[in-house]
Length: 208
Image (cartoon, rainbow, N blue to C red; front, side, top):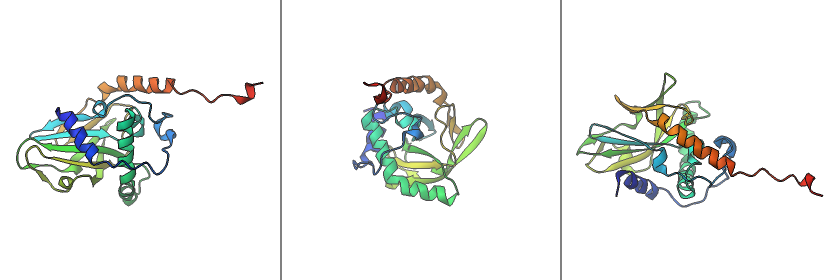
């Protein structure tokens, strides 16, 4: 099993199958409807290494979550719904109405590998956005050290929404991943395909 596939399975094991409590507002997704995407979670995952620590970063913004195939989209929506109270508590404590949320996995490549979720940052248009809190999804995420081949999974909260329709860089200490900009063409193509499938409501007044 590939590393990306293994991380996807680990993430899905943490997600319940309960339905969302309320329908998500498409206004937050730029008008994209639910359950129309065809992309995989790996298509929106940024991965890089810092020494013996491998990092996987998946932005959980509606404008990319709705580009995913229905199973992946619904799983991430359920994850956000079950974590919403803790996310809102972090936002409120900072006086913020909007925050950015990412699903992050730390994977150890050697024994005794240390990690610190709050070291994650976003670099956007020359500005540095910092992590302001986290929501552990595995017991290991609350620790600061991993055994070889073990993983810690959790949500990391940022002080701004993640700008998924433009280039940005994710940093961890002195390491970083800057490949999001290379994905934009494909993401926009999928966005356009989905929007092309949305039929405008019929005009009943034109019928005789």
